[in-house]
Image 1 (spheres, one colour):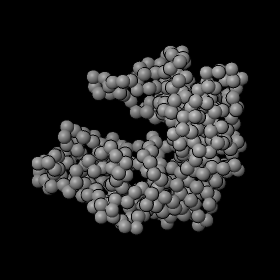
Image 2 (tube, rainbow, N blue to C red):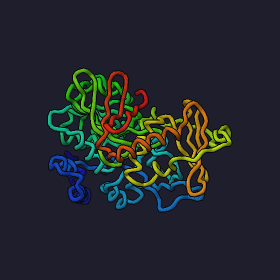
Image 3 (spheres, rainbow, N blue to C red):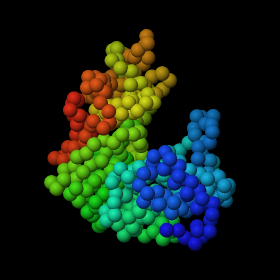
Image 4 (tube, rainbow, N blue to C red):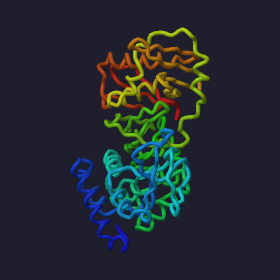
Length: 400
């Protein structure tokens, strides 16, 4: 579904077709109905302005973000709109002034147009089909919403976003392209009761645990697809099937996918690491494992980082020089790891021995033969959320 102006833009039409072919070639699209949606939805209408990272950091080590609009550089803007890339549309919860955008140094991205291959992967993993009613959490730019509308029809799509300014921009683009889903400003932790119950709930943001409202708003047999994340920046995707008794269960899905955290679940500021380190005992012990077991750039470490996060859900990690600090502002616990003689030594204090808990998870993971992501299941019900794997002790998620 396109507007007359868009139909006249031969460049945009050709770029959409090229994007669809690229997504088909790399395996992102196997369903011809989603392929047809990619060829129809004009992504450039949903990203009038966005930021791309520059080639280098500034003198303070901050990422330099360059604004891209049709007015600044039409060719670059249109090409980027039809690239398989995430386009940052907002920083620090503030909508940019796209009439006079400025280069940015640093800042926390808080909204984006997710790369098309990931959007399609999410919709495909949720097993959408004609006749399904869908709740999308995190409208963002509205592009993923438009794809769902193109595939299912607008009447069956509800999309919510906590940011009224962002939703207003997305609504203008959606309605301008002829899509009319139900849109609402709402907190994704509580779903959207006026349109419940849903056959599918898909979140384009991450949660520390599964919100109970989402389970309650899903029909028996319906599915919830969301990303779990936390303050150690470990992530996992889960596909839950809701039972008639209000419980839900499902597998973790493969891949290293991450989304911006729902704003209420963002990590709190923890202050100066040196202040926390000052309260640690002078005597250190040899660490059984170094931090690289959960920080290395590998799928196995990415997976293990999520498991470790389940054991210390309130911990955050930061590195100062060669010292790695863990801080838990909820319980008042801290740990520091320092390289020593080819290994690591650790000092810990507080009611939670943070690194010892991480080490216990690594031990269990190794003893179980380092099971892959797909061998874990999440069970939600009875006031608990447990990550289950037959050869490992259960791990809990924080309360929703």
